[in-house]
Image (cartoon, rainbow, N blue to C red; front, side):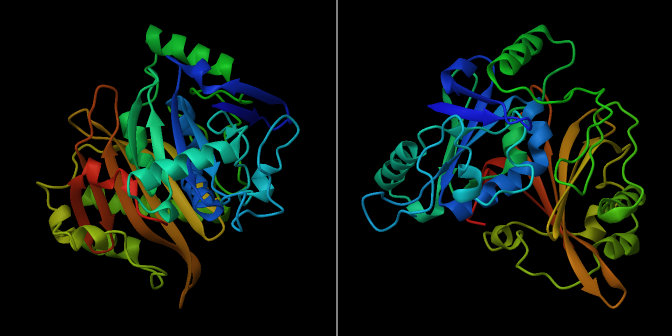
Length: 366
């Protein structure tokens, strides 16, 4: 597969995925324009972590059979140098989605869409749900499924580079050489690291970069801080307050696990001294705000030395106290080199369920 990237200066580079062998991993997401747009929206809050883990996301858009009635006459079949219209004509142009080393588009989109369509049909899967495939640095398939990938679970299988590790440093150099340059330092020293989507900010590992003191991102982080303060103190009333807000716009994502028999532990249980994490420290906070949804990802370090990747989502809501941000979900999963994530934690305002990581590797249609 040949892919194309473009940086913020409109410089383009076309290269075969084969050139990333031993240097990077690839995650191909496939589906109709709406499904792929949602996949990219879900991936964008993790864009910096995807780059740190040398993961290239390649969207393949199914526009229907070009010979039938399913094709859109105003869509673009293929992409090549100077033909970056695919972002706006086939998939909604999420602000900032075209920038960065983490994303590339296939130069022969429809050919690959046909391949995935036939693959899903031969497997007896519903083509409408789309699917995804992940490929490791050795070129072998690491995982696949119908629907969409859970990006936090995907990241847990491909942790970020280890500082000072020669093998990781060599792979990083090859990864940067093969792909279009990102205008910034992905390690720890970029003072300009900020959210490319307007509202939000990132705190690279080991820096003292100040997070927003005002605006929507600051309001989101106030709720984020209140959640972790309640968690560290085991304060059930404060935890309930951290989740308080307007009514849900859609069912809790925990429902599908509870319906299958997963045990929901209420916050009273989760916050017990023998259950809540001891010596919890946070680092590498990243905030992304898109329309009325905010996402915060952060690294949790606990007393036993384990590192977890935590992700929280928020809805912008109106209540009697005025507009604000309501915490809707809190996810954690083990995240570290040589760590195999077996259990993922999924929480909402009622409490948490622990589920096998494999059970949440794929998401149903969003």
